[in-house]
Each structure stands twice: as structure tokens, then as C-alpha cells.
Image 1 (tube, rainbow, N blue to C red):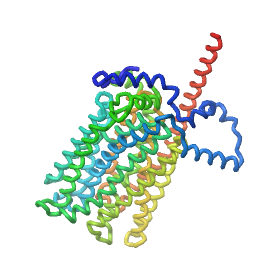
Image 2 (image 1 turned 30 degrees about the vertical axis):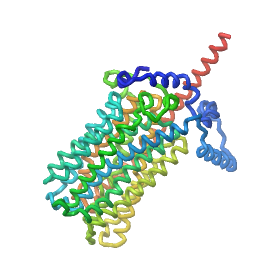
Image 3 (image 1 turned 135 degrees about the vertical axis):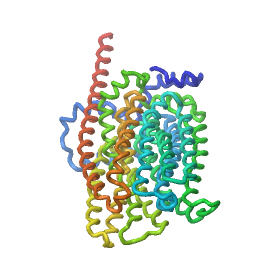
Image 4 (image 1 turned 60 degrees about the vertical axis):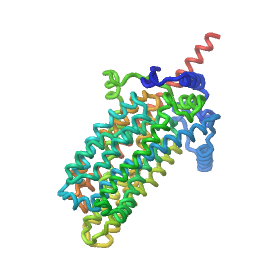
Length: 537
């Protein structure tokens, strides 16, 4: 395997020790004990699937009960639990805090808009949507370059630097005097914030096994939703306690405080983030733990990504087209929440004028539902051996049902029932956030045996092209001038959900076929080795 370029600069004797131990321990640490006991059955499952008989209910119940016991009582190799606890703490604390502040920053714009910024800066028409589009354009441009940078720059350097850049720009936002100034700032913020989401999913895929990945992806995604949720309460507190302090409006103080939060988190990441298993220099990991971390995940041959061969490989792979299109469609099913439709609905309510506190607090229920849904589906799909595609069906049902609810409510806008139905629909729609963790974990699972940089580019491509669509999608279908009912957006959501269900079915079939082919190749390879060894005897 070609070494990561960073290793040539930072390599120490301890690296040689743990890499040698990893090679020696490869076949002893690649699976937990519970998985090793059933490895032969797993490899033969594709050959036997056509001959399986329907089991009677008692036997099915016993199998489910046994599966639940195995899931909650997984046996690990010596030292593996300690390793997992360490990387859980240091990776998830930094990544979750980073994403929490990242989402706090994004949600604060909508909170500031309904808390006085619109009037202070003289917003007109769809300028709020244009600002979001400027951010999206920068975010799109930063996706692939940011993940490719992780091939050349250590994550513990790259992530904190990007964080300090976007934190500084957040504080600068407090000094603007017109919407055009925010447009320029948000464009560059988008470039720097592009490192967080897809970069973290790349790191999680590098450290965790398939049965561990979903929950960690869910915890990470939930931290962003928590930032969105808590942002409303923070804005309420700042508006009531700091409004007018130092001659600044409350919404300006929000940007200042949010920007200051990035400094200690960035410093923490610089000193404690463990990079990736093959180039980690983390002082809290022993040589044996570093070797075990390498041995837990497949070893693949790496090549430089800046070549025509690599570009051809990416564009001709089903991974690229399958997962990029999956997230292009699925990302738009989050439009109700990502475009703050509930807040805009309340701001433009046909009969009721809500207070600033209500405008900030009521929408916080949407990300709260998203957190519960994300953790539930991430854990469930881990338990079901990575059946992430099930989330696609749930999202399809949710998007269609909630759109119909809003469309029906719009026919009698002055009714109290209309308000109740609309708010219930937007809260339920928050559950579609589950697709973030599960679909990116699905990509990580499927590409586990591919080059790490290939996986990084596909993950970045998923988010990049979704945001390319989102750059104009939100303006066309969810512009602020479309409030309170967003009728065009409701029909667009129904179309997206139908397309998502169809694409999920096709992608699940392709992924399942690819896994079976790989299992057959493993069986064939083991059989050929056995035959050769017998011939030599």
C-alpha cells in the first residue's frame, strides 16, 4: 500500500511498530468474536438464499430474540472496547461540537431574520433566499476540494483551521448594514463550512465497522439538529437580555457569541483529534490500539487522486451515480425544515401575530423530532445489519403525507384546525432528517473495500450536487414570498418522495448484487487457496 503523503513527514518509529502489528493481526482482529463464529454461514448465504424455506412463527421469534441478544452482547477482541471508547470520546466530542456550532450558525440567520434583522437591514422580496443561495454556492464549491485536502493535510489541522475561518466570518456578520454584505459573507462561510459534514462522515467511515457506523453517524447528525433547535432558545435569551447592550441589537449579539464559540472547540481539535487509523499520532492511543484500529477496517491500495485514471474510475462507478443521485433527491425532502417553513408560516400567519419568543421557540420542535428520528433509524439499521434503504421508504411516506396535510389546511386558512394541522405536518416532516445519517452511512458501508480517497470524493459529491440543486430549488419552490402555504413546494415535495422511493429500490438492488458478487469472490479465493495447498501436500 502506498503511504499517505502526510506519513512521510510525520512518520515516527511508533508508526512502523503499530503498522507491522496491524499486518500481523489482520486476520485476528478484523471481526468481533460473534461475527467470526458465523463467518462461514455469512459467506455461503448468497449460495443458499434460493433454497431457504419459510420458517414457522416460533422459530422466527427465536431467531429474532437471538439476534437481539447478539446485538446488545457483542463480544470484542481484547482491548477493542477500550479503543472504541477512546475514539468515541475524542472523535465524537470534537465532530459533534463542531457540527453543533455549524448548525447553530445556519439556524441563527433565520432566527435573526424574524427577530429584527429584516427590519433593521431593510430586507425586501426574496433576499433571505438569495443569501441562503450565496451560502449554498460557496458550500458546493468547497465540498470536493475539502475532502481531497484530507488526503494531503491531517484532519486535526484542516478541521480546526476551517472552523476558525467560518467563526471569524460569523462575528463579522454582526457589523453588516445591508443584505448585500451578508450575501458576500455567507458565500465564503459556505466554502469553509463545507469541510464539516462530509469530512466527518469520511472520518467515521475510516474508524468504525459496519455494525458501529450507523449510531455514530446518527449521533453526529443529531448534534447539528441540536444546534438548530437550541439556536431558537439562545436567540430568545439574547434578545431579551442583550438587546440594546453596547448599542447593538439582540440579533447582532447572537452572531458575535456564536463566532466566539468556535475558538475553544478548534483548539481542542488541534490537540486531541486522532486523524485516521493509518496516520494517527494521538498520544492517548497505545501502539497496540493503533494496530488494532488499522486491523479493524479493510486495507485497500491507495493511489493519487489527481490523475485521469482516478477521474475515470469515479465517473464510471455505480457508487458515484447511485449515491450522488440518492442524496440529490433525498436532500430535497428536507426542504420543509432546511428552509425554515414553519418559522415563515408563523411570521406570515393569516390571522395570528406571534411574538418574537414564539417565532423562535415554536420551530424548535422540528429538529427535536429530527433528533429522535435520526437516532431511532440509525440504531435500527445497525441492528438490521445495515439495511439503510428502509429509511428511504419512511421518508417517501412522510413527505407525501405532510404535503397533503398542508395543502388541505390551505383551503380554510382562518380555521383553528388549519393551524393545528399545518404545525403537526411540519413537526412530522422533521423526521426526514434521519436520511442524513443513514444514507451517508450506507455509502460508507458499500464503499468499505474501495480506496479511501474514492470514498471521500463520492461522499463529497453527494452533498455537492444536492446543494447545486438546492441553490435554485429553495428560491423556486420555497421563497419567502410564497409564505404561508408554499403550494408549489408541496407538489414538488410529493414528486421528490415518489422519485426517492423508486431510486431507493434500484440502489438497494444494485448494492445487494455487488455485495453478493464480492462474497462469491471471497469464497472462490478461499477455495482456490485450499486446492493449491492440498496439491502441494
